[in-house]
Length: 174
Image 1: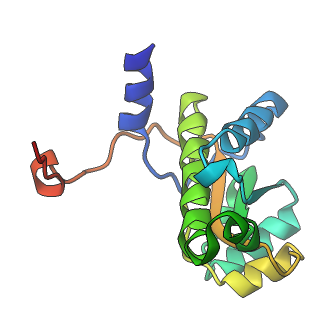
Image 2 (image 1 turned 180 degrees about the vertical axis):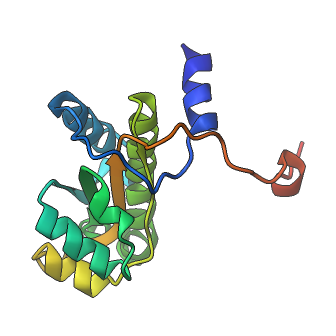
């Protein structure tokens, strides 16, 4: 089992080409559950997740993401939002400026790994106009969108992408 999980992590890569095929309801539920179960600082869970199936909204999100059209072609687009105020109640300025972002990153990674494990694929999009995305979703002022993640069936099987060697990115201090 542990080896299978590692294979999922090692083989995951970003996908920008999706089949025109909806994902099953059980998959959607498990993707949301995988995000909800991510770790968060102090277990504050300062997030709110949107699962967008509506094509018009997906188109508007792609526009808010500087015209990255592949976003709108995915059967579901997740938007990971945070509530910095909630994090600040437990951790002050550091909670507001850092911990809530780290918490959203953990939820986003859980989403991508779960998608890969189910034979789906996705892409973590951070290049978007935050104000436009917030307007598209009609967000309340204290929610901040931090990631857009289109998910769907990949057009073709992908493999792992090039990564720097362990030696290039690691220092072991004994």
